[in-house]
Length: 517
Image 1: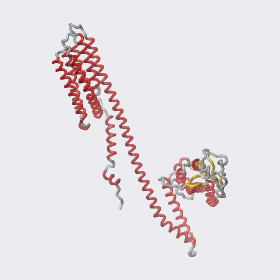
Image 2 (image 1 turned 90 degrees about the vertical axis):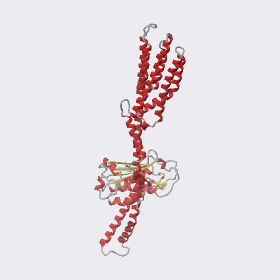
Image 3 (image 1 turned 180 degrees about the vertical axis):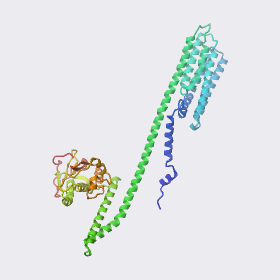
Image 4 (image 1 turned 60 degrees about the horizontal axis):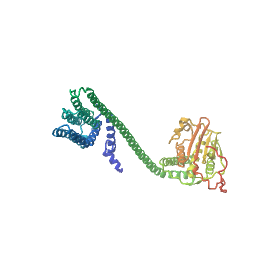
């Protein structure tokens, strides 16, 4: 019975494949996009935010406006009866209190319960009442014969209009509702009289100032709307980035799960295949060697040899698949030690000399003398060299040549290269042969079939050592592969090892000239 994990339960719980976090993120993106859709002067989200700004400004200005109203009432008692001034002050303070109460109620409500159009109408009516209360100041001061009273009235109206403009700028309709009664009051109060003469220019100046206040409020509103629009675009971009990150995390999680499943499958298959394969190799070797006596029919010996060779090929393929899977998963553990690069290369060349002679291929080597050892995994270095030399021999035609070089890089590292005089690799096929199980057109025509894992394994092992793998090829000229080990892996302090296995005295330098790989 398969194991039921918590993750499987979670997936089953959300049938649409989206977790609550992703749903919240999608809602946030949808809300940000809705903000960019205009309806009238703004959309519902913008309207609510502008109303909130208005209410916060109204609450913040309530105390200064109360103090201003009381101060104006105190000064007005110099020209008007105290009872009338008290009535006017009560009306102004009541209008201000009503505006404050509406603003406070709006801020205490939840966004879902806020209906922007209804609240706008309420605030406009409240500001209109506030403007009417202030316009009554003209009636209070009408008929006062003192010339300074006119200047005083103009100052009070301009000051009240300026405060209304700043406080209600985020709600243009409220600005107009508050300033319109004040404008009518100024026109009525500043009408020409026989006592002062015609004062129409002063009336026009006052009304022009109020009009300027209205335009200024509209500009403040437009600027704030642009700010909210930019903020919405930024929120939308952040939401999309978060969504892309969530998708990336999900893809990475699935890739990690797939990689883990692949590793478990390969480990299981390795065990399941190796057990019968060992028996096949063992018994076939006994049969082909005729340890218990000769075969009655010679064909049985040939069949046994074919079975043994096929088993070895299958074992090699399994080992390559496992090595590649460990390298790709980052689980290949390097057993590092001091390795003499030239010695490993020479050993590999000796192992493959017989194969090269059978194919009519000449092998030559050019090795830099007295190179110090490098800190590396000898098994991995040997596998790198064998894979590259085997490929070079395999794809070099009869009469061709394979050249092996080892030496210094310009940066102080060590390199070795394998160059053949084979048919070469088309440039467009290089990415193919560097991929797992990738085989080029020349490999498909070659009699020696391969798994297509040799070069990816070599590249992975080189990169595990911090080195670089370079493949250069030209059609009808040949292919060269260069493997470079970084300078930090060169152990200059250790004595060099000559091919005979003797360790000469430690040298201060690094040998002769250096070549660029």
